Image (cartoon, rainbow, N blue to C red):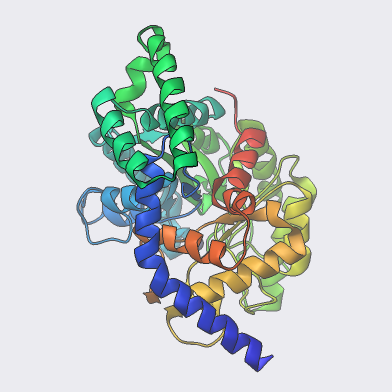
Length: 418
Ligand SMILES: [Zn+2]
């Protein structure tokens, strides 16, 4: 056992060293290669960046946070979720409802301002039609101007073997033939939007609605499409995960059941990260739609109440939901140090895959909500994870599921069409 762990570690360390250089090369080749889809694109189900940017009035283009626009672009991010994180239990009890609601609205305003200010790079994703538009823009982005195409293809052909050269020439001919109709293509106008990054606005602690279900309609109107029911405190909906058994076993409150039903009706994906175990099983019982844990790992691998038991992993999988792997050191390993290691991310991925199958896995980094020394501490380093997983024998089809396809399946199921 020790030997295999050491061997595993050695392989990983070698991959990490090699990965940094090789991935850069791979990404460049893939970008230049018009006939291949770039599998490095990914969806990250959880970050706290918008909330963190709100108070110091920072921007997304140039900041000292983990997530910035350049980092998202470098890492091949496709869709990034940004939460309105409002830890409702921290606010004074007497005027809590007004305080937390104002805070939620402030962060939603910040989100709107950032989206408007960076509309050349970012697009809101609030419906399945938005996903399709974004996918269309991505495809359009892969098309290049004739001058760029000629240059790229010339470089590629120089690198190719004779057999590949024939393929490349055939591809060039096909693309040229396709170009004839390009002027009449209705998507042509959107090509200037190539390479945009989708933004999903999420809620962390639906306690912001107090016990007023009408506010959930406003939460939806403000763009929230995924939301946790609690953070680490009790609210009108239910109880948080906890080391105390009486809290951990506490069920959803009656208002929590109504909230779950209303989320199903509106098309807001229910996020069980941070929820008590008792609340989890109530959601599994009440929700008519797939539900997800945006940023939680395996409790069997790391015994932390924020992580999910094997029974929970199976329940989420059975309902068609997903689990976003969290990069926080304390949820990845029980060692008690503050290092988030790729090899621990792999341990959780392997275990969750063994228990729930590869259709249940997704990514939920928790960037800007976590601290410590992180081997992957920015979207810019996400290709490294793809590389390491590939080196460890994961098939490209499985990697695609983890990186974006599984999450898309849930959005398709839960969200409104338009
Ligand atoms: Zn969280």
